[in-house]
Length: 166
Length: 232
Image 1 (spheres, rainbow over the protein chains, first blue to last red):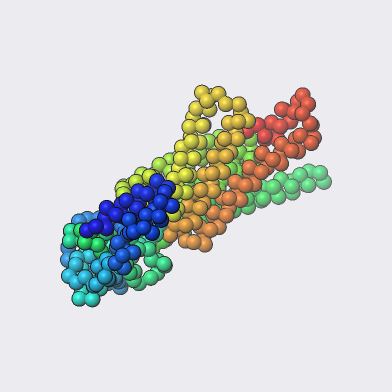
Image 2: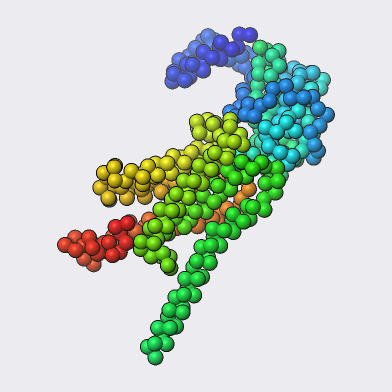
């Protein structure tokens, strides 16, 4: 709850170039990012993460075969695993482009916070082999991730979420 | 005797010209042809394929473009070379328009991110730099008279923009994982940079220096410079 205005303030201060002031107020405990106090910092939405997002991708058992998108969803601060959250996943694959509905699906996280979706092989799109993942269901702050595969030949890609309460 | 020497030398020259043009064709066509067999194309829609290949063909055109006004190419010496240089310029502008337009139709958010310089892909900024340099070159050429620049100044800006277009395009292309096969892409990029460097050095450094050493800045120097292809 309290972390949002605080992080915004520290961001503004940094943007204004008052790095010294930020440091000072941090050492005085005036602007303490949530992470510094409670531990695990929330994930930030990555640039381009929401591109070609189609809200409410259907729940699926799988979207093709041979490739796995995996990850874990933890709560910011204490790092507790979050069960039963919907993670939406989409990517350009051998079946078609990134906006194509055949490449969009959702899965739920397990008791240990992990999730996995089997789909068709991801292929480079706009010059980089990458996937898109979203948590966008309201209970926690929305996060869009865009992990890049180290090699286009990889058969899996992973991305973890650390979610802060909304 | 003299006649047969002449025949041999023209024959040799013709063989040389054919070999040179065959090499140019190979440098320009092989990387594009190899890309046409990329397995990625199967999963792409038509705008993406057209947009992608416009980029690949544009890169390929950048190899011959700097050589056209130099007079190196058999059959395209002097005026013909400069005329083709202009047509290649038009083709490069069309290629850039198809590239950006095709990518926009494929994924508007990714293309807008790139144009606004907020894309996560590190190569986008080089592509956009090259695109604006091509636009600036087109303006420079279309409004050549109206701009009223001194010819030497106009030429300096044109050459500077051309160098930016080539370097930015090559950096852009090398970082992309796409339809082009990395080996042939690397060779085409090296050929493009080499052709640009040789043409710029020859036209703007070597030939003016030679002309200056031969004639010095005397009356008639201008004509000597023109004869060495400096006035282009």
